[in-house]
Amino acid sequence: MIRRRTLAPAAAALAVTALTLGGCVSLLPKSKPAHLYRFGQPLAAEAVTAPQGSVGVLRASATFQREAAGDRLLTITNGKAAYVAETRWVAPATVLWDEAVLAAFDADPGPVRILSRGEPASAAYVLRLDVRNFETHYTAGPKAAPTVIVRVRAAITRGTDREMVREQIFEKRVPAADNRVTAIVAAYDRAVAEVLREVVAWTNAQAQPV
Image (cartoon, rainbow, N blue to C red; front, side, top):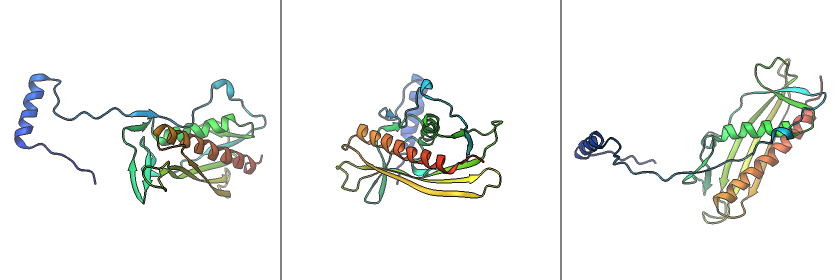
């Protein structure tokens, strides 16, 4: 449970006086700056090539594990959830995930081309990627090196009648090299890359030219 501190009447009056006189004086404790990290580094522009004979696939809106969707790194220890202190993703995990998905498809020579909503090209298929798990598990105790779990449900439907073509669960469990933030972030980066590599190959196999 989050504990909230309230100011007593005398302290509140003192705080108002201090702010009135000093302008920039604060009686509230300052929080330590968070270290920023990211996963799924986007590719350089010159590395992206458009495939020949591409199949347009619209990426549908999907869900992302709510506890991990923001900019904090979620950990699970003996069934208890917590966030890594003083550590943030450089952007919400949902944003970094979207960037990683697009970069993975752009870098692949297969036929699938991910379309954005509003593009004039028609979509032969619709792809939905629900991120079920995006978390760090301390299965061997809070001091041991944890394991990063990324679990995604992929579903592809036809663009004309939205009939289901196929769905599949993709999961990667990547142990961190040790119990340091940099090692955990590296495990996230690897887990995301491996999951998306399989998702892209699976999508290319399902999205045959109509």
